[in-house]
Amino acid sequence: MATNRTFTMIKPDAVGNGHIGAILNDIIQGGFKIIAMKYTSLSDEIAGQFYTVHKERPFYGELVSFMSSGPIVAAILEKENAVEDFRKLIGATDPSKAEAGTIRNKYAKSIDANAIHGSDSDENAEIEGSFFFSAFERF
Ligand code: IDP
Image (tube, rainbow, N blue to C red):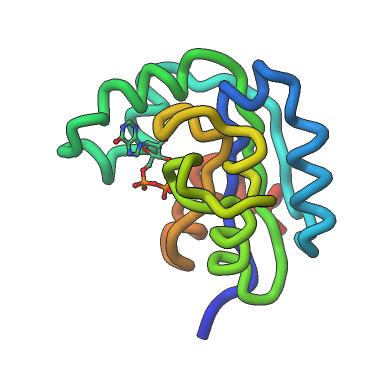
């Protein structure tokens, strides 16, 4: 059974382009409740740890330097069927293929700088949420 939480990051491109407010509004209007949230920056080392599952992929180095290029907003979100519904709300990885009205369609410019992260499974939502937030912050 699907759990009711997912994890997101508003990526450096969307933060730098002034889209934090609009994206949070889309998330809330999409029916998600914000359980925990922080505005922070990732070092190369921390970004590398977060994306360690992609270590063997050709874009890993590019992804790590992009994610440490400026501030991000990390958050844990709650909604029934959260992981799947949030992936629908953000749209395809490549914004040129993301459906109209999705967050990546509206705010992203390229496949690497694609505005927002959304966990791809319940298991990863839990791992990623606990990477950023301590147990009492995730209560
Ligand atoms: P997802 O974020 O939609 O789940 P993944 O395939 O898990 O997509 O890739 C993780 C992140 O790596 C993407 O959100 C994007 O920022 C970056 N990425 C994916 N494919 C490419 C690529 O071909 N070139 C550069 N960056 C990529």
